[in-house]
Image 1 (cartoon, rainbow, N blue to C red):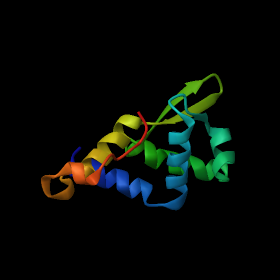
Image 2: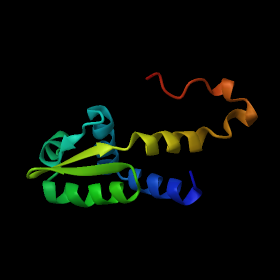
Image 3: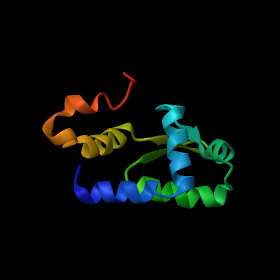
Length: 106
């Protein structure tokens, strides 16, 4: 991951509502969540949620797809993994075993 992409992703996640939205989408799985249901999950008005989702999508952390009248949003796990790898790339002075596993999920 390029530094500029990491900066964009961190900037998008550095706001409490956007972080909550992203975490909710990570928990939802690859099928994602309809925008209306997501707004209820994070207790944010739909109009406010829309601007947050645009920023997350611009940073490459979220993807959207239209299904009939609904827009479904999902986390981009590839980008999340790349961001984590970016952070851990030079872990522990070249001894990544010291850091242990980053995630327990398979």
